[in-house]
Image (cartoon, rainbow, N blue to C red):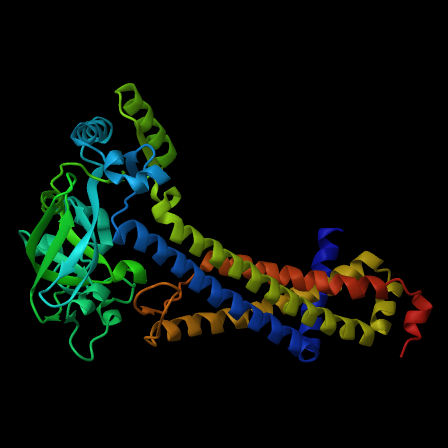
Length: 446
């Protein structure tokens, strides 16, 4: 088809859209509603996935890579975790390797996990104790450097102290003041605002009891510096954060469970992991290194991402089906009412493919009108919902989180193009049937 002919058909299509747009209001409305549904859901998913990744990587100090002794995820490690802990020579090797390769551009956080009992004199509960390098952990947390809902984080508390999960704190008679919600501490971006907030405890110290590596019982008494949202309910009801030396002293060990590494921006995680493991093996150490998203600790994130991807595909399919059927119905009615016009165009020398292209252009323009209306509504609703302060509980999250929708121009552009293309395809089917009629029959049609 020549450029001149295409331009002529486009001008005709534009005039026809203005003339027949009232007859296609249902199709335009369906396309607009479909775009709004797609745009809002895409904005929600993008923000949710972003928050999930940030919550796991930054909030829990997982960095980019997790380094452990090989076999740490096996049933044998569950039965005898100390056998698979990283001892001092292995920790020293990791430090030397990172310094040689990245200098001071990589930050590592040593982590030690242990089980014990937490009590405040009257109440008690099983505690999942987490000891970390406090200063380095604050760096790796990035935006989540201030990670407590109330009180102060460990790097601000100074000295030996403990931070309890909100759920565990409730068991130990520590809570936020009446009328104060955990979600109130979050900023508009879903990250905690760095400000000390009050909390109330019947007793402001916690006693931690644990079994040491050698099987003895050890006890330590620490001030409670703050309360944090542990994320998942099971973690929130058990977690106690401590400085690494404090937990090592309680468990009577110098070993750590794993090392989390924050690499320089743009690093190839798989290449770095392979190089670290290979060099460790050459030095006589049997280590394993994985990006946090591939580690068992990232399983919840992977499940959430898979589920949200499935929801997105389902919503997209529903939107396309509804919009496609609406446009198909409208175009079938439009074509049926314009058989004589089709016959006239054919009598004037327009080929069948020209007529089909004309109806496809009309449908495409209608699609763009619907998408433009949907875009305006989508942007307005996104701003309104973000400013409404709506909170909700998401799956296993321990406390409500704010409803936040992102602005996704790339997704909106792709969705708009897809809906306009779908409208054109829906118009081609009835148009192809109509142009097969003989010219005299089409002109005689009423």
